[in-house]
Amino acid sequence: MSRGRPLAAVESLPALPFDSPTILEVAPLFRELQDTNPVCRVRTPAGDQAWLVLGHENVRALLANADLGRSHPDPENAARFTDSAIIGRPLSSDPERDRTDHARQRMVMNRSFSLRRMEALRPRVQGLVDDLLDDLSRRTPPVDLHEAFSFPLPALVISELLGVPAEDRNDFRRWSEQAGAMTGRAAAAAALERLQRYMRVLIARKRERPAEDVISDLVHARDVEGRLDENEVVKMAAGLLFAGHETTVTRIDMGALLLLVHQDQLALLHADPSLVTRAVEEIMRVSVSPTGVIPRYALADIEIGGVTIPAGELVLVGLNAANRDGRVFADPDRFDITRDRNPHVAFGHGYRFCLGAPLARVELQSAIGTLFQRFPTLRLAVPLEEIRMKSHLLTGGLEALPVTW
Image 1 (spheres, rainbow, N blue to C red):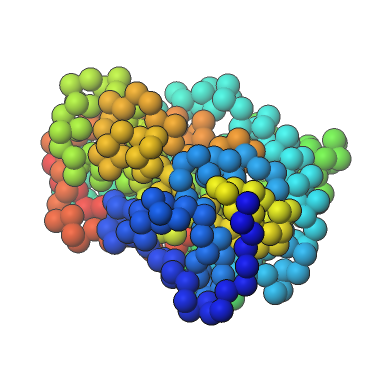
Image 2 (cartoon, helix red, strand yellow):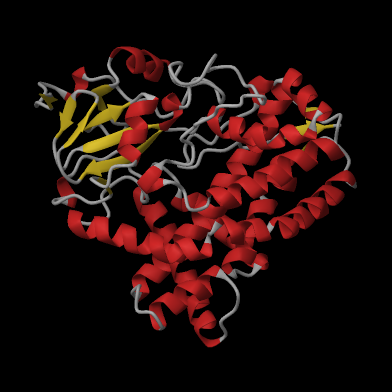
């Protein structure tokens, strides 16, 4: 088992790209290293050293490992991924507390995001989809699908689920986008603080008038069960609001784009609408994010792919490349909505499987399935080359998606 050794110069390491060459492709560096050196040292966009871990098997193993987390014994001097206020640096200096807090918070949230509860939301989600598409049908094309459909749907759904007033969605959209910037840490941190202040006010209201929503669940876990402290309630609520709409907006945009670009697959979906379930899983697999990785820190020595990563070192878990691993996915670059074996890691895995995955699936299945049923002649209103990705944001997404019909 080899162990990480100091290298002579950070500049001699491969530089991790901030984004892929196109919005639908995995960066060439990831492809090369996945085949030749799947656990290797790289230079982050912030200029620090990190371990890049690629390959489906390695990535799944890391995601299921409790010794990977968000803490570091010396946060101020820890390696940085980017200047992001959310993922740029460690969250704490106590690895053991990192493990126990993560497990405790997940247990609290499991009740609020159970598969049964998310499935019960399906009729309401479908109603929101229908309303938005009714409005879209009354517009004169071309229309920006991102603004008319992809953004408002997840914002409305997460507002209802959390108990956030829907009329505030433009405010939390602005704060979320600013907080998700991968550069300009001070401004991003200020936006994150503004989002958390908003949540403190809302939490106080829920304390006075609890309802059937997730923020009320968190308040109950804090005030009645004593399972959370006040700062945890605030940060968890703000995190859910941020992740609960930003990431789904991106996937609706990317799903629509993938189907519009791959007309053969769209024809299959038109012929058999039941393929929407597989289509959503393939959209999750094929869609790329700007960074392509999840940054974490080794809380203890971790053995992976024949290498020992020392405790305290920055680890970049390569999701994009893992989802295009030819050892797992036949013809991995092909967008294939009939794929019947699709163990993608877009929602994470094991210890870090996304709590919001059942909700995201409900939203995406309703959104993608209904969109193309209602608008069978939907097509891009601009050449693909003019579609731009938000590579400056943690969650990525499209700047706009102009369509016509």
